[in-house]
Image (cartoon, rainbow, N blue to C red; front, side, top):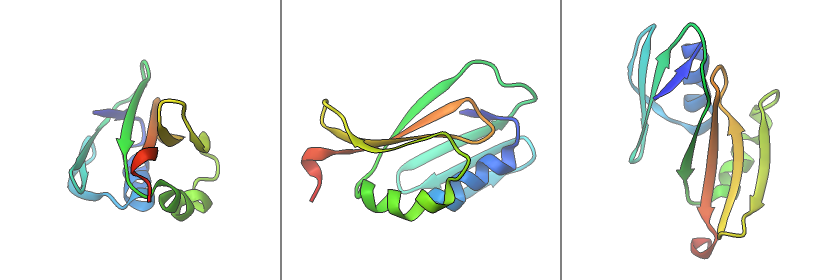
Length: 110
């Protein structure tokens, strides 16, 4: 569950950039889904602590190309290869203290 001070903006981040769909949404809680992934977002008045989560995808570079023009102002690390066999990019989720790692297993890339 991702705590957010601006739940609608955080929902838009996932739906606009990553094409998640809304399963449930109100002023205090949302459930989003895409393929076999589910993300829960909870409205909070104040953020405490941080969190990280990892989304493993296929075609990471294609995904990056599709979102890179829409991430101005966000904390981002562009795609790079890791020594543990993953290609990743990192992106801060708006209005949260969450860092999302998006990765693809290099050995499975075509």
